Each structure stands twice: as structure tokens, then as C-alpha cells.
Image 1 (cartoon, one colour):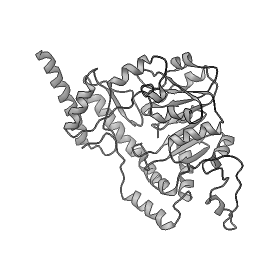
Image 2: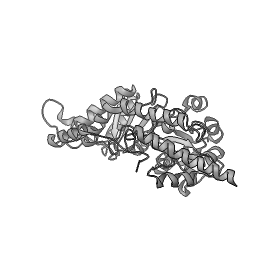
Image 3: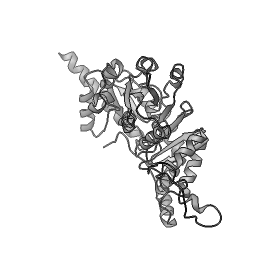
Image 4: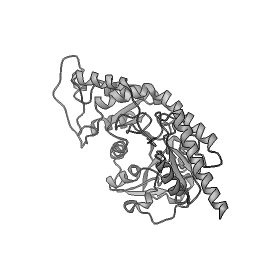
Length: 366
């Protein structure tokens, strides 16, 4: 089976993990510190805070901003995390429609649904395509989280919001099993969030070994915190994946180019993406179920990114979503990751063409 998404590694990750295992420091330690420094440099941020997941990062930022009993806006075409974290903070989760081509949050729809108690927004760079945050800034001056789960690394990603949250989940462009990062230039916010990653403790155990006079056992807790810090086992993998990032992204863009060129006239190509986290093609209405089954029968896994969040009862909205409701029915994600070979691409292209050529002949026969 050619998978739609998958992580790719080699002996370097194994060696990095063995180094951590042999060091005896498996928790949050030197590898996490190294990863935070290098990732901040990669995306051009002053501060980086490594955490357990993008989802925990979104939640932590809202808690650090002390946003409760308010309204939070996010796009309906997204993974569940962006809509559900508002509910974790006793807020209402208001979903906006998306732009037809980019599938990112539509600023004009946000303008229509903006409420007096809208305190923050979570804006997603869908499939690595930059959302139009500049247009949102024209009428909203509150805090914006730029969700960069799909944007590692799109040049300029993470620079439009007040804070950015990234993902290293197992099928992302720089995976380490699971994990995330919060980046910001706001020093006060960073200092507030850091102890929140470990139940409010102001310095990690590793930090308390770095003073030059041995291990300091004491610490101070001044406010409520949680437990969502990254550990060295994850960071060791992420650091190796970072070394491969440029090569892996180049291959994803190569796949994107071949699909765009060779499937023209068969499927609608998505807007250009630097990361191609998902290759979200669009197929003619009524054909998605058929082509998914056909491809699966021929050893090709495909998927849909994403079912609109307002379709789930937990986030039901009392309004219409004309773009998302129309476009998501056409979405078909084709395999796109570094493990897809040149021959795989040719095979996938040929099978997609075979399905639609057969469908056209059948229609003409009637």
C-alpha cells in the first residue's frame, strides 16, 4: 500500500536515540534546549518553547493570555484541535468559512461573524498555504494565534500572528512521533508560559543543573501550571528530521509539480504550497467515494483533509458555510511524503487517469 502520509527516517535517528538512551537523560534536557534554539533560528523567532503537541500549545497560549468566558474564532476546515481548545477554556468556539482556492480562513466571513466578546482567533495555514492574516488585522486588533501545524517550513510562516504554534506529529513535515513548539517575540508571554509547561515550576530539572555549583533541588510555584513539555527522546528525533527538512520539502514540491502537471484536466490542483503537508486535490462532485475505493483496490491510500468542524455535533453552528460545505465534498488528498518514489508517482497518476477515463467512457456509453 502506498500510504497517503508517513514519516521517513534512517540510521541517524536510531543513533540519536541511542545517544539519549545512553546519556541517562530521557526527560526535558539538553536535546530539548538545543532544539528550541535551532528552531527559533529556523523560523526567525526570539523565543521557542518545545511542548508535547500543537494542541497543547494552542491551549497553553489561551491560558497564558487568561482568556475565559469569551468567543474565539477559527476556521471550520481544520483538524478538531483548533475548534475544541476554545471549549477547554470555557469559551464559545465560533467557526468561519474559508476562501475557495486557499481553503484558509476567509477574512470577509470573519468580519461578518465578529462578536463584541471575540477575544482571540486561531488562524490556520491550511496545507502550508499562508492565511491572509494581514486582511484580518485591518478590522481585528486582538491576539491571533497563527497555527503553523502545516507550515514547517513555509518562509514567513509564524510571523503574522502574535504567537505561532507548530506541530511535529507523526506525519508532519518534521515529525518526531508527536510534539509541538510555541514561538513568539513577546518575552513577557514566553516567561509566563515556560513554567506553565511543568505544573508551574519555574525551572526544569535540567535548568537547575546549569548554575555551575551543582544541582539545585529547590523551586518555586507561584501560579497554576500544566504538564506538556517535550522530552529529549522526541527532541533527538526532531533534530535529525530538521537536518533532512530542506531535502524532504523539495521532494514534496516535486510530487506537487508532477501531480499538477500530469493530472491537469482530471483533478483540480490545490493552491501552491511550500510544504505540501497535504496534496488536497479536488475531484468532480460525486466521484470522491468512487475514486477512493478504486485507488484503495489498487494499493493506493488516499484521504480527505478535512471534514468541516461544524459537521461535528460538538461544534455545531447556527449558520451556513457555503464555501466549506461545497468544496470539502470534492477534496481528495493524494500520497505526498518523502517515501513516495518516482515510480510511485507515475503509478498514482496513471491510476487516477484510469479511473476518470473509465468514468467518462461509461458516461458517454449511456
